[in-house]
Amino acid sequence: MTADVRPLSGPARDGATGVEARAAYDLSREDLAALLVDEPPFRVHQVWDGLHRRALRPAEMTDLPGPLRARLEEVLRPALATATRREADGGDTVKWLWALADGSRVETVLMTYPDRVTVCVSTQAGCAMGCTFCATGQAGFRRHLRTGEIVEQVVAAVREARPRRLSHVVFMGMGEPLANYDRTWAAVERLHGDLGLSARHLTLSTVGLVSGIRRLAGEALPVNLAVSLHAARDDLRDRLVPLNRRYPLAALSAACADYVAASGRRLSLEWALIGGVNDQTRDVEELAAFARPLRAHVNLIPLNPTPGYAVRGTPRAGVAAFARALGDRGVNATVRATRGRDIDAACGQLAASDAPRAAGQVAVTAPGDRAARAAGAVAGARKVR
Ligand code: SAH
Ligand code: SF4
Image (cartoon, rainbow, N blue to C red):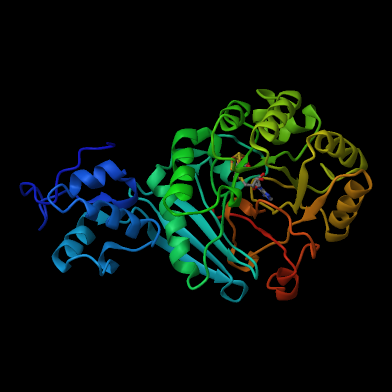
């Protein structure tokens, strides 16, 4: 049990029910059983299933008796309150900025494509990793998200996506998922076991926390791993990604190789193209040499400008040339297009999903370019500050 949960029928404490309100997705199944101890046993599964697989608010669980429904609606509260909600791409991109109970703000982005519906979720309010080009890194760390706060972002997306079915989750919003390992992994298990999402459709993105990648290799669920590489020589990566000083490229590469061997999943490498910094021939060579032995797929994203970093993204033609040069060296690369730029969009600036599409990968698109999106472009844009 994760907390002191009193039965709904317990002595009056506050409000009409006498039970403290709790964030619905912070409860474990055991907590819910304690809450429903005076109800017939099948109610526990019914409410749990309603919250997770059916993504319902208690008030919408019409298979419950009215009074129980009303009491649960009062007790099982949302953890996320909408601070802003914006749409772009003709409604195909929805971005929320959530206000959490302590005043923290995190974002979630839902992206609808012809063949998939992907949500990008945050795992921390802020981030302690300090990557120089990243708006979240520039803002610093505030706190870890709880498992329930991560799961609830996905539930919000499931509800929003209807009648389409949410198919993919990428952990590429604010924060470093592997620095909040236990809560993030508990969320992964809940998404798989209780929301019914396929592990093959879940992607964790890490800046290269080797200890976390090693733990991941020991987990039973084989999720996709994306590593935000951005530089494949230590002196440059030390500057872009300070964590590289602790876990240099050789250690990262070894951990990635072990993950691929243990999980059987393909690895992807994220590379934000920064004009004049990591988009030269030398960078292609180094990236290809890193990616090839790992049989990794590379996702290229032109850097989105952030206020704290005075360098621009590589121009469109340079991005395409970089992708071709990788191809010439035997490395598959996808150029990720930007989703929702007009709403200052996306989660963690990018939403490269688990796997590139077989065909129709496109160069960077103008905002709202439906044809290009239909061809399979995935997304990225700058995050809320
Ligand atoms: N902390 C994790 C996941 C969140 S960041 C990680 O770093 O992988 C999600 C992705 O956005 C990472 O690949 C990150 O490198 C990328 N990113 C950060 N700032 C960016 C920017 N300004 N432009 C483009 N991509 C950026
Ligand atoms: Fe954190 Fe990822 Fe941003 Fe680096 S890129 S500061 S790890 S959120």
